[in-house]
Image 1 (cartoon, rainbow, N blue to C red):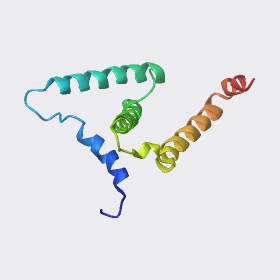
Image 2: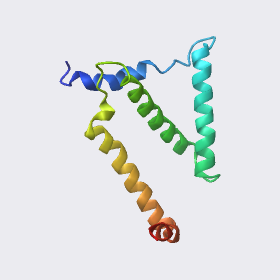
Image 3: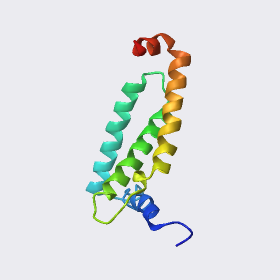
Image 4: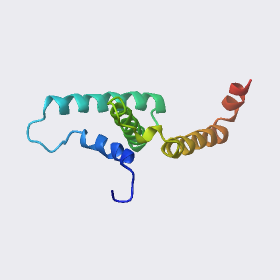
Length: 117
């Protein structure tokens, strides 16, 4: 269907579970989702430090939500999620790992050498 296999459809099914914020009265599900996002934002803000921008926490929260929903879909029987594929795993993990390593070696060389010891 549409030139893709059906196991990649589970990635898009997780997007349907994200609540809409455009309702007049928020539901309990929407309130719980907003509190989870707010708590994740606070945690990432403390991890990244006071000099970080708000956009960087948004990237980490969206990646966390994507992986969370995909892995949650994998709990249902007969659904093989896209996070089980090496292509999606390498697409997400390799650039993040490489950027963290380059950032650490360029900006915090002494700390990176300390971790090697």
